[in-house]
Image (tube, rainbow, N blue to C red; front, side, top):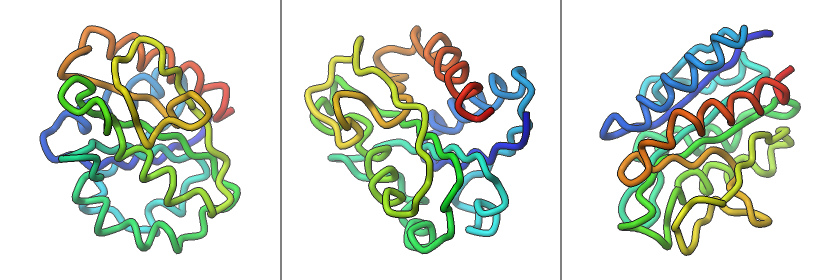
Length: 170
């Protein structure tokens, strides 16, 4: 099925755990998934994959995870044209209902002009947020995970989403 580069930023470990679960799910479908914390990743690491997944948590009032701040200027300049890119984000929709998974939306906005093929949009159904930068045309730009309030849904959401990605990445 090919190789996938999964790049995540995680401060508290939640996004890292979700990244590992996504990697396991895709590995079980025949993909080889290389997982990178963006704190130690380079643009060269990203550019060697045709299939990419970017994941981030959202902090404060809608800020992207700190490690992404360092590499984002390079990501914006990188040659990602022709690559297939999916996103996932973690957040807390009850405490921050108006900035839920905004970090994922910020990542999406930063690569929009790079001619990547974005895949993996996700329904907003079943979430209790009021607003999000990650919602475009009524759907999240990628998988939205709320481990604080909906952890019981995480495994099934990851399974459904990776089933979608299997088709999109093939």
